[in-house]
Each structure stands twice: as C-alpha cells, then as structure tokens.
Amino acid sequence: MARVELIMPKMGESVSEATVISWAKQVGEMVELDETIIEIATDKVDSEVPSTHEGKLVEQLFQADDVVQVGQAFAILETDGGDDTPSETPTKVEEKVIEKEVTKVVEETKTAPITNAGDRFYSPLVKSIAKSEGIAMDELDAIKGTGKEGRVTKSDMASYIKTRGTVAVAKVEKPIPPVTPVPQHTSTPPANTGDTEIIEMDRMRKLISAHMTMSKQTSAHITSFVEADMTNIVNWRNKVKADFKQREGQNITFTPIIIEAMAKAVKDFPMINVSVEGTNIHIHKNINIGMAAALADGNLIVPVIKECQNKNLVGITKAVNDLATRARGGKLKPDDIQGGTITMTNVGTFGNLMGTPIINQPQVAILACGVIKKKPVVLEIEHGDVIAIRHMMFLSLSYDHRVVDGALGGQFVRRVADYLEQFDTKTIV
Image (cartoon, rainbow, N blue to C red; front, side, top):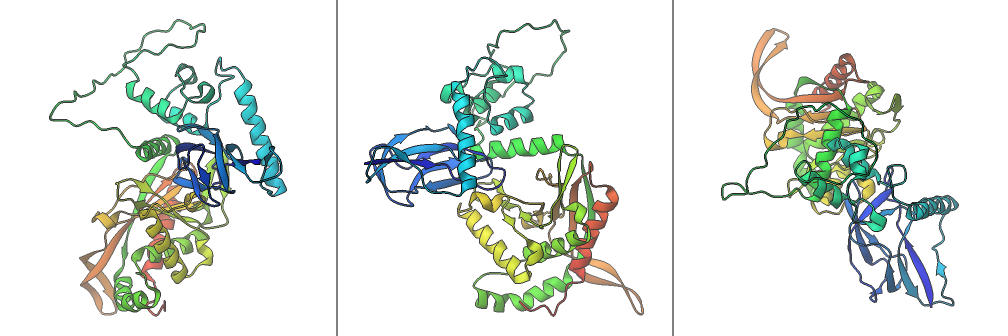
C-alpha cells in the first residue's frame, strides 16, 4: 500500500492560508477521486476541497479551526501501490518550489519555542483582526491559543474580543515602564433579560466587520454624487427583455448596463482603477469590477466580473447572472471573489435613493447606484425649457482621498452618468 499526501491547493491571488471548518471524511473511511474531503474557509469565502486521489483516509493532519498554509499537506490517504512512502501528485516546477518553501516555513514555526512576540507565529487573518480591534502585540502575546502548538486561532480572537476588558489576561512577563493612568471610556454590556436577545455574530459577519473597520481606518473616505437620466435605458430594456429572456434563458437587468458604463469610464480615467500599498500606487491594466451582492442570510459578498474591458453587454450580462446565481446558492469559488479593481453596489435594490458605501480594500473607489425613480425634470429643448417626467437615478462614488482627488472622483462619476445617458437605444443583445 502507498501513502499519499493531500496538498492544500491554491485558492486565488493573495490567499495564502485557509482555516479548517469541518471534515467530510473521517479516519478509516474510503475517499473517491474528486470527492469532497474537507471544508475550509478563507478570509473571503467558504469552499470544499476535493480529493486528488482515491483511497482510505488514514490521518487528518489538522483539526477544526486549525490554519493550513497553501501547499501544505492536510491529510494522508492509503492507496493501492507498491510502497509505503508518501507520494506527491506531479505539479509544475514552480508549484513544487512554493510547496517546499511553505513546508520549510511551517516546520520552522512548529519547532520554534513560542515564548514572545519575536517567536510566536500569527496568521495573516489573526493579525488583521488584531489590527482592526486595536490589539497591540503585547496584548496579542498574552492571548492563550488553542490551536496546534499553542497557535492563536480565529475562535480564540473572537472569544477574547467578546470578553476583552472584563476578564484579566495574564501577560508575558517583561519590564513595564510606569505610565500615567488615562481615563478610558468603558461600556456596560446590556443584561440578557426578556426584553433583549443577545446573539453572537456568525463567522462571515465577523469578517465583514473586521474588513469594513479596517477600510475606514485605512482610507480617507470622500463621496461625490451625480444624478443620471435613465429614461432611454428603461425604455430600451422594457423593449428587449422578453426576447432576451426567451433566447438566452436569463434576465437582462440594469446592473450589467451600469457595469459596462463603469468600464468605459475607467478607460477614460485609469487612475481610478488603482490600489495602494504603502506609498506605492498599483495601476491595474485589467478592469475587474466587483459586484456587491446581498445573501439570503443578510451577509454580503463581492464576486468579480473579470476583464470587463474585453466584454460586450451580452458577455457582462451572462457573467453577472452566473455570479449572482452561484452567490445565492453558496457555490462561489475562491477565485470568483479575487482580483477586483473597483466595485459597484446597487442600493436601489432596497428602494434607497443613494448611499455612501465603504471602499473595498485595497481598491480606491466604489460606486453606489440608487433606485430608478420617476420625477419631474427640467429639460432644455429647441423651443425652450419644459418639465417632463423622467426616470432618474443617483450615483454616488466613495473614493480614497489619499490618491484620488475631488476632481478625478467627481469627473469619473459624472462620466459614468454621461455614458448611461448616451446609451445607444439601437443596441442589439
């Protein structure tokens, strides 16, 4: 019998680790090829990992809430073969190098004594949560970890944050200089009475909370507003939607039309399609537009329409419908929510006139679209001004004032409105 290591696969750009949620197979059970063996969570999305071999599961190298690095073995299968030595699936040379380096780092982490901040390993997710909650390194060192080798997990952070300030934590012994006491605001948690129900945030809500707080602390938010006349688009859509539904088997909504206008405006103002790392500005060649989507449980996820500059309206429509359907069904893959360069959110879905959205880091801009509403508008025509009933929509752009000035932000959102108002009603889809 041969023993085969199952390796944690790549899960998209910037994803370097995953947290084990649960095992679909237990030790001693048979596993089929491509059968789900483990469920994992990244800081973006939950997903299932299929087995790359078939055989009997003989060892689980990690348990629930443990963090596994990309390229690291997470399970061992016993398969039909000629020897008892671990084998590895043939991969590209580059991937082998990455896996070896990751394994080396992990092994060094396991053997290093966890005594202070210089030696203790913290995952990027734990560091992100600590930063968003204002937890200093000394305080982080004092948190007792329940993970492998005493590692601090997400659950440890959540438990600590919930009791922070009410439970004394034993800190690592080190000289502490005298400080002058500073009065601090303390809040008394509400009593769990019959009038108040207290529930804990689910895992995704905790991640959203940390991400949004981090964004407000990182970027200097500013918002510009314009109003767009959507009458021509409303009339055009009413004319073509039935035929499109019959031919393509799916609806054509306003979302892909707005995304197409955003892509055109980004071509005119490429410095809105950037991200910031320290004092460096990364200018992105591809226009990857994130589409904020509300889930049935009330949480939010942002799948990404990739390379919008290379798609026509039909292509964008199909991509939008596919991602929206899989988002509602919980079928998104990690790569579906990676690589966004600018985001669009439709607050009009809930009947809202406008909104001031929070930037989706590390991007620098997010566009919110309000409800399309009939209202009286003054129009300039050949024979003078008239008042007409038009379908109007507010657009609001929140942008990072560190790198996007008011002129650029205002011009960009105005250009999006211009493209919407100049929509060609002879467009064939």
